[in-house]
Image 1: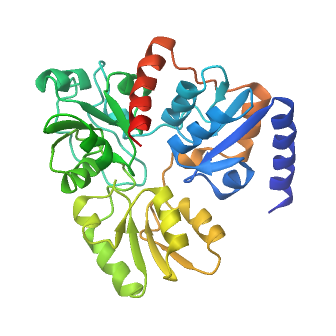
Image 2: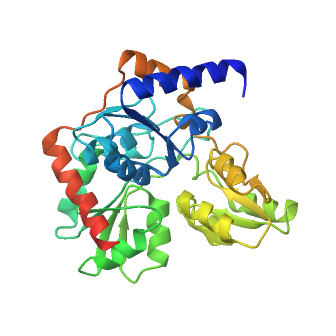
Amino acid sequence: MTADLAVLRDQILRFKQEKCAIILAHNYQRDEVQEAADFVGDSLELSRIAATQDCEMIVFCGVHFMAESASILSPDKTVLLPEIDAGCPMADMIHANAPRPVRKSFPGFDTPPAYVYPPEYTLNDMKKEYPGVPVVAYVNTTAEVKAESDICCTSANVVKIIDSLPGDSVICIPDKNLSMWASRNTKKKVIAWDGYCNVHERVTVKDIQEAREQHPEAVILTHPECRIEVNEMADHVTSTSGMLRFAHASAEEEFVVGTEIGLMHRLRKENPDKTFYPLRRDMICPNMKKTTLQSVLRAFQENRYIVKVPEDIRIRAKKALDRMLAVL
């Protein structure tokens, strides 16, 4: 660690103690931000941990919907998001009522395909089109969308959640790739929204083929947000937390990791005797990398940016999360 980073961490530690705060960092955050955090993990895991902590403030180093989840589960605590522009393009691909954007451009990524739905089409339009069909909302959605859904899911439990619901059909939002992966593993009809993660979507079959040629002894891990044809070629498909558990428990020594490269820090730190290769070196989420130690310090100094979910939305969104937790 450089002297500058050490100074920043000392300043952050002082503010954290003064404000009775905890710092949460998603697995995709910068290495130095993960090292400064009290807890590192996936989005829902972190929010659930924060709800159990005796603190007055939560500084969430992640993206906007994650800070919303912390606010939903810890309404009496102040939740700060150090970079207010750190959003999730996939979460922005669906709205409960307001029209969604026709197209997003992502610096450094190929232009995504046009959406299947017209820009004015919303979640509530889909619910009217499929009356009575339960809505399963991925946690990677806004609080407003969760509030209009029946139940939430994660990439790790999506199949279990779908199978727990009545009827032979479900609406699964917003990730079409996660929905397709779920449909391969359930007997129910999965009606998918046409959203995707701009980081995982760009992985191709060619990337898997090249990884096998370059690292023939390695186990290939991919995330359910990858395309279905990619996941069908992988050795193991699982969430970020699942990748951490799998790598730790496995007797294998080499792994190709098909998710955002921020996870490599924890994988290498927790498994120093094993080797990890990124499936693609450009699997970088620009929004996740916006947060720096400087922005964490500013969040403490200036009490910014406060994320507070309105109570009427919070109560309904929490019901969707609680229903999921009741199934687990």
